[in-house]
Image 1 (cartoon, rainbow, N blue to C red):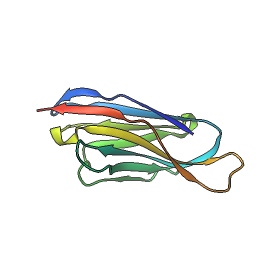
Image 2 (cartoon, helix red, strand yellow):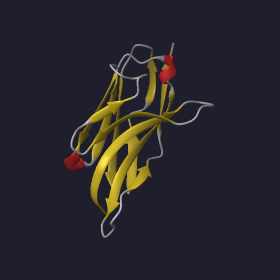
Image 3 (cartoon, rainbow, N blue to C red):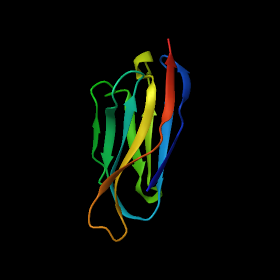
Image 4 (tube, one colour):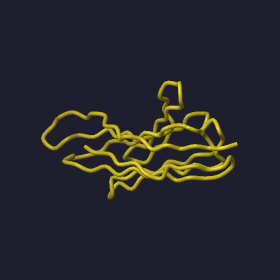
Length: 120
């Protein structure tokens, strides 16, 4: 499973960005997708996730500012980020829990990441 993220960039504090991540490959299903981020000098942290049924979860640090959505037909997940803060600066990674065709188990897959920089 390959994950291609896009949409990162430089934005001023208070601004907005929308990230996208499309999954491709020989998978039979995707049970959930999500976003993580890693700021310079820090560990990767979970940001938000969405199950194939539509239930969503957010980290407290982004709740009310970020919105995760998905298009199951396109195997794509989005992250709308509003009211961005300098502390949101990080490389954002897309994650998918997917099952390859012929496999009986789900596995986690990761994209390469897209850089989001929020200037003060």
